[in-house]
Length: 182
View 1 (tube, rainbow, N blue to C red):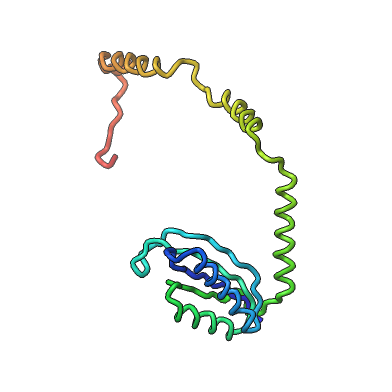
View 2 (cartoon, rainbow, N blue to C red):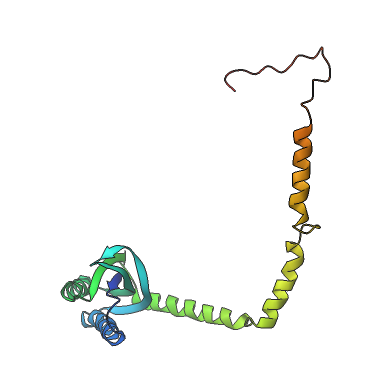
């Protein structure tokens, strides 16, 4: 079997019931053609890079599946017929895919993320306040209030403006020559 990925952009203006029936139909087509759906990702409504059928947004759905060419042909035929699908793209991920191995890897990855979420304690308002207080001393790097700093900067600027340019210390030292290239 081959492993494919298909991304479909669906009309965002259709009702939720209509959208769910469309997504269910897409998932049914693959097994009918002796394929196996590995993963379905519903990304939701997003802004498009350019308008498609005069619509600035689209509902994205990604399907990762294994099957032969007939599954891809039937899926794309369905997309061409149905007006609710605005665009689609199918990509061949692996020409020699092992379905059982892929499903085992996905199950292992999902169990690892679930275990990682269990180990991290839930973030509460008390821990968030403690983290904020711990970060406050590092944020205070100035000893003077901000209102005094601009006044000091203006005083230093006026002192340097009143001073005359200094003459060279010794008259017998040659002045530095500058070239036109600099």
